Amino acid sequence: MSAQDTIRQQVTSHPVVLYMKGSPQFPQCGFSATATQLLKMSGAEDIFTVDVLQNPDIREGIKQFANWPTIPQLYVNGEFVGGCDIMKEMYQTGELQKLIDSMDDGEESPEFLWLRYIHDFLTARKTYHKKQALKKKMLLKVASEQLTQDEMDAIDKQADDLTAKALQVEEETT
Image (tube, rainbow, N blue to C red; front, side, top):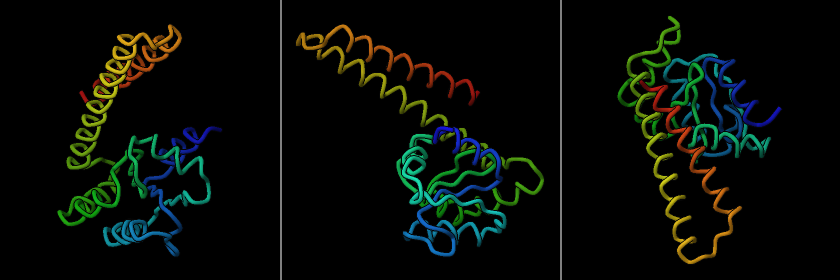
């Protein structure tokens, strides 16, 4: 099973999943310690944690899975919530507690739905900008006649893949 498949299985099989450095009992960074404490203070009881330091493939794969560069990462009901800073902000506004409480009735809170919508929108926007950067790179190389046909095809495929991903995210948010 690939790292992406493992991650997908973990986040969909557990209501609360925290990818962190270390364990809740022995966190290996301050951000992971803070994330664990915020979840406990928000009333989360059954937290499935994954120590990314134990598996380099998971450590890198989780960053790609949510298109989020830092660890820890929180998933609730199979959806990416955010990292430590977002968790802190949500805790301070009471949104994290509401999100954890909403798990009891099996429904996602309006705040969580809004957060997911914003996350999906930003992901689609970032994907669009990556596509534009790839096209610009290709045009610059073509202009200087340094790009082979295989390189042009590869860049074009990457741009098409990013477009498809952006459209998929856009469809999921509407």
